[in-house]
Image 1: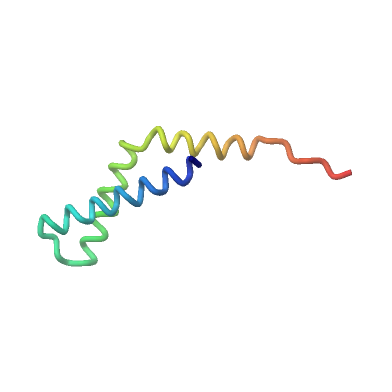
Image 2 (image 1 turned 180 degrees about the vertical axis):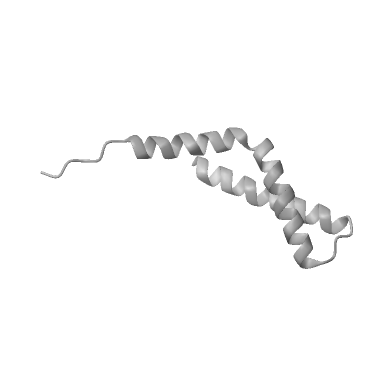
Length: 72
């Protein structure tokens, strides 16, 4: 599967899980719930999704470094 899709889906999934857990723990203020979930899922994704992030980086690097076709 495309590494960018895997990484994006993983980030969204991690955010949704964090949102659900914080809601179940009693955080009811919607703005605070989203902000705290965003921060926690961001830190968790930095630790947990390093392999996926490296795969995305390699994919982008390969696309940038590839020579462009010559116009005749």
